[in-house]
Amino acid sequence: MVLADLGKKINNAVSNAINSKDGNNESNIDLMLKEISTALIESDVNIKLVLNLRNKIKSKLIKSNLDGVNVKKNLIQKVVFDELVELVDTDKSDTFILTKKKLNIVMFVGLQGSGKTTSCTKFAVYYQRRGFKVGLICADTFRAGAFDQLKQNATRAKIPFFGSYTETNPIKVAQLGVEKFKREKFDLIIVDTSGRHKQEMDLFQEMVEIDQTIKPTQTIMVLDASIGQAAEIQSKAFKDSSNFGSIILTKLDGHAKGGGAISAVAITNTPIIFIGTGEHIQDFEKFQPKSFVSKLLG
Ligand code: GDP
Image 1 (cartoon, rainbow, N blue to C red):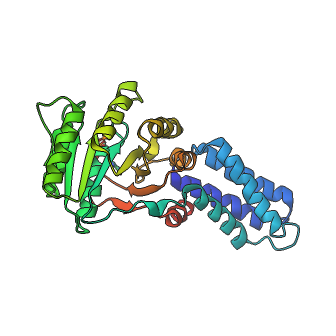
Image 2 (image 1 turned 30 degrees about the vertical axis):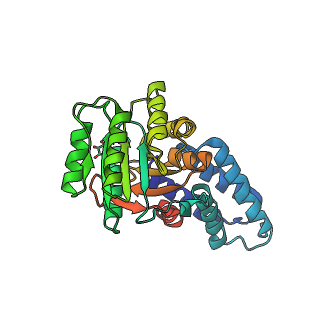
Image 3 (image 1 turned 180 degrees about the horizontal axis):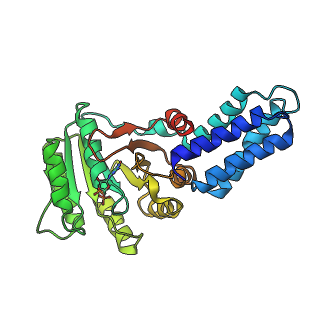
């Protein structure tokens, strides 16, 4: 089920409960919660999170005088809205702050195909437009063509870049790039690391070594919103090895189910900071939990 369908289903469940003749009784509310839960599970939201959400919504509705006559549409919608926001809002969204004239080294991690290289450039452009002196480093020596892709993106966006066609050691490339941009007083250095198709040990080992060498001030995991349940396992594995502090969620323009990503955020307790909404540089937005859930619910 894609995100738009999830919103429709949730709204239908709420409307049915309200429009039903006995809309205020508990079994009707239970039916509504069941429909909402099914929609969330079909969208790949973790089942435990869904049950938790269901109980929270129910107890809030009960406290709001469920037996009385006034279980109103606004109230139900507000409670559902608030709980969904809470699921994606880690209260840490404001901790991602880059300071100009200071050294910010941001390392990007994620599986191959997640949109890492594209997001690096979008991120670079976003901060360049805000006055940062930004440099991009391609430390992906694993995928043939990775450097050319980053170089092409960076050139188009007029962002200085660093990489190598001959050096095969990604740690060395990252180190040389960081040293060069540091010398030239860049205040935002972005390091694109290599991805793999799966969470493989050598990938994680490489990430740990790059991390220890360049000592990033921030690490961001790029997560494809359409990967469903796998998002959780992937995020946990990356969290253990790279201890990323924030997430960029990509491909929200497509047929993303999104639920897996929502679970990944809730389970790793890590905020989404930006979302990718297309292949172009400008398809990049700051993540706002409330507006995300508003869009979700249509
Ligand atoms: P990497 O292997 O993780 O570096 O992934 P890439 O940056 O090469 O992206 C893989 C594919 O996903 C490319 O075709 C990108 O154009 C595409 N892509 C990246 N971000 C988005 C997004 O937000 N929306 C859409 N529709 N496509 C994206």
